[in-house]
Length: 497
Image (cartoon, rainbow, N blue to C red; front, side, top):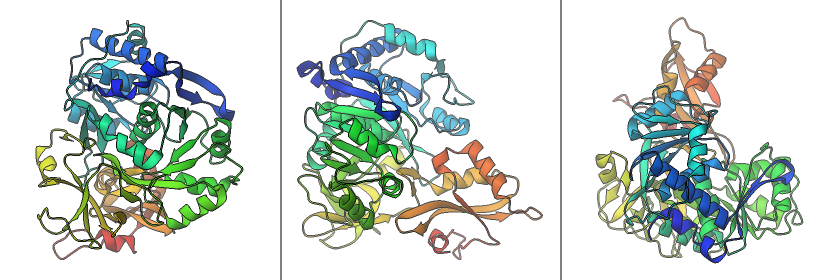
């Protein structure tokens, strides 16, 4: 059976009473515990409920749910029913939701009555808390058999046009996650993985839920105040064997919490992805904690595919090498040749199109999908080189996409929102280094004639139109922006301003 949800919950057959999901509150208090059997039944109930609501295989379900267990139940329940869930961040504004609704045309917008909704739901039906309760009461249905290539879920990522692109994944994506367990996390049955992300983040859905479940391990997710000092306490109290977060959180933990080799009696190692790991931060964490920190490189189109791990020793400055079974190459950055470059040459990192974890394509964007491939290679847009041992040496993005604490953000999307303010004549956005390993989204603004540079007004405007992680953290008021002779913005010059 190719159904992704069924594949993730296979341990329900061999270890039904083992804990699959534990939701922790403040002071590591256990709020919810779901066994594999309970989780499987709840997801199959929701799947049956979706069918009873008249939804047909392939219909999109936009999820506007907060950080509760309802999110994964609805996400995997939709997949189990042959639907295509669209997970979204609870931080998105109504404007941002409108863009997604117009693009994916969902049949249903499932919400919790608290998380913000699109201003224009289009032709979608709104289903609130009463709908969710009705889904949970349905009689469990058998897993719906699905073709390996059938759409399973749709996630949105920032595109260079400034409009989010839908990344469509197939049910075979479950098989595509197996190399991550072998080459990165080293999860085993009975392990306990604590993920620092929210349920609605794809990093959490994949690394925090799918991977532990397929390995027969327990997923630990925290719902409480997210001060840096709580994480060491949670790791210890929850008896976590693995901890997963973005590099910026490790930096904050080291700054604001006490970390020693005795802090985590059960922790074997920690995992990080979402943004490049600074070698100094890697050294500081391993020295303080006495535990390995394994990095992975990935993107929405394939999740992680390069990593270090228990079987791949770390090399500071490199995220590792291709996970077992994956094929990667470096291609010419300036041409259309699909011939891999030699060892040591810098170009564009690419993944072979045969990888089961690779997306089906960009939703309703056949031209963009075709442009992302060169022959048998999917071109990631990341600049890198390979050494003689196959380790990847990352050289940053080949486009302007920024990285904000693990989220990809297109500067054009931020610019479009800021340009709506009546006091803005022109604006350019990029990420600027403020200290080693830390970059902040910065807006360079030319005020309209007669307007004063009002940072507070612009920040308030940004808050109404952009999710928190997309908003500039720094505003600089300038009289001109650096451009080429043809008028193209020179973002590299801004980064150095």
